[in-house]
Image 1 (tube, helix red, strand yellow):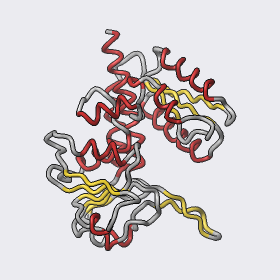
Image 2 (cartoon, rainbow, N blue to C red):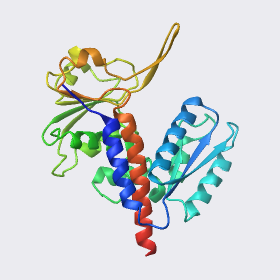
Image 3 (spheres, rainbow, N blue to C red):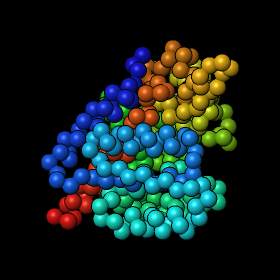
Amino acid sequence: MILIDGRKVAAEIRASLVEKIKNHKQKPAIVFILVGEDPGSQAYVRMKKKAALEIGVISHVLELPHETEEEALLEKIRAYNEDETIDGILVQQPLPKHIDSEKIVNAVLPEKDVDGFHPTNLGKLLIGQEDGFISCTPLGVLRLLEYYKIPIAGQHVVIVGRSNIVGKPLAALLVQKKPHLNATVTICHSRTKDLKSICLQGDILIAAIGRAGFIKKDMVKKGATVIDVGISRIASPNEPPQIVGDVDFEGVKEVASAMTPVPRGVGPMTIAMLMENTISSFLRRQKTYD
């Protein structure tokens, strides 16, 4: 079985990004907006800031208290939209319940939406336009498949999960009429009947539901490629929390031909794609100014 090493691929991508910007006097810049004190969100922002620092992207972190009003947050976003020194704006999710996440996502300019969540960017992905930003996790999954030369064209891809962050945009990406794509895609979800039989049809099986160890050995076609997008923390008495994915790794590795581990699989790629999107925004904007 091939172990798909996302950390290795992400490191190579980061190195290539350094080369892209090394001759520019001005450096790309991203702002991370963090509302509240959620430990998970704080950890994610630290990882993203570290990645930015490593490749020479200027990063700003705006930390706002949990009780910040929606309009105050919108005002901050508008200011960053107008700031010509900022190439990417990322509002860390989840937001406090009193803030409308959809309204916040829509407030970020599409050309600075390096997360790829804005309806304009999602729409461009759906119709195959290449001047928008693709959501970071779906793009990271594609890059892993390409790096390991796993065929996509004509293959049956089964995605378990229909979120706007992973499942839906990933399906829209893989089904595109382009030489390296052209997959046949099935999306499964909580209302899918006979999920096991559909999963068994997948030449490529992608799990993105956030349920620890949900995909078992008997749900995977022999020789399939398995991509695990899920991440959960499992607490055990007298032991530190364990990070696991949506796939029962030890069981599934007996039938899969290739699969990603958790951690060190898709996670590092998501951050690498965020940096790539930020640098793409920077280079497009530099070209406009020139």
